[in-house]
Image (cartoon, rainbow, N blue to C red; front, side, top):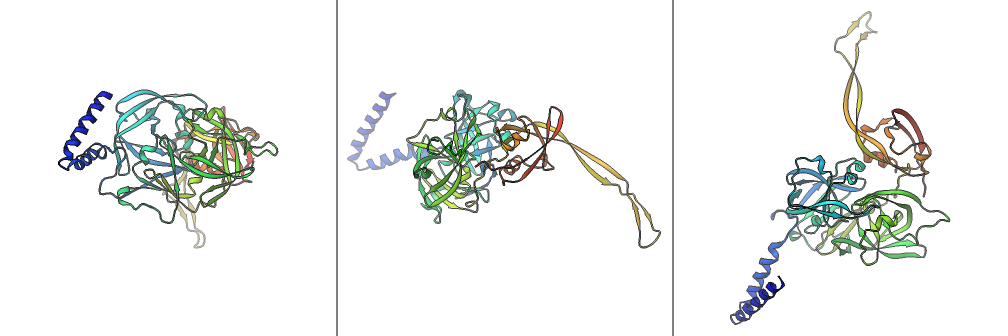
Length: 464
């Protein structure tokens, strides 16, 4: 192969030498470049006459969930700047989904496990709004334990990463829940004149940003991965400058689900995070265990990750081509950083049958017109019962010594009601947000355990 390439370039050099005499060698070079490189642009593309495309998304636990079509099948993907390729989960739920040119492989990521079995599928058609990639490659993961949908409460079939961002300027409006794709050929160099501009560095197709974080001796520089697929605010890998025992400024907790399994570690708060001119205080920060980050290939002096709980405080523009990010603070900017004060993580686990009772009154009635002032009306009352299936909500993780644990809640309990309201009438992420809302709230749980119905009570209590 190398010999063929050398021969090719030798022939090209001879051709150029001869064409110099006719002063047309520049035209040959231009045609060669255009034909070989410009026409080879791959990835997502908007139609040539479309300058921008607005896409409505769902914001769940700070994460952006966008509707997509994969080979004609409608799915929902998580938008994640922290991955360099697309991933597909929950394929067992989509029997009609067709995947092209699949070959076995293994992938690794955050979590305490090792690599996981997967397939690499190539030459698929993936569409997001009006943007289409007609030769999209993705990794298919079959491990059901890595299905994010039960923890999110909404279907999440996959993850969109670098391939989605690379050809556009991507605007994420976390207040209006709108994603806008700009065709860079139809936009000025600065897509947001009122925004602060930041230079990004890239490693393995992932964006990194220099920020300042507070330590014992003041602010220090930190290189962080921009990770829109993490619902937390900050992850810091080096805890020695932040975690103390006297006084104790942290608690052990479940941090999330990664590609290599569950992630555990410490939760704390740092006094300050400085992103250019923007200052954030008392920022919730997670410190994952060493086992969870052992699979990471570190880039230079990477300190950790900047997640969606920070990003959602801005309108964000990503310009991967020019290695730029633009930020403009929004109405979320001054809101305090919360964490789960109940100590329980909820998840969907199968379905249960719910009986919803409705009363209705028949149209027949009797009137007693003994006088004009009092009219007696007799209406027969009947009960109507609606039976339907709803997701079963269980305690998936329980923090030791948390208010819920001290009240007698156990891992695996089925939650029936929270403060008298049936959980099937609420979205899972709304229930999760309730546990992170305000210290001092009293929580009444109606739970089911081993066929018995129990009541538990506790108060949301600040740890930090």
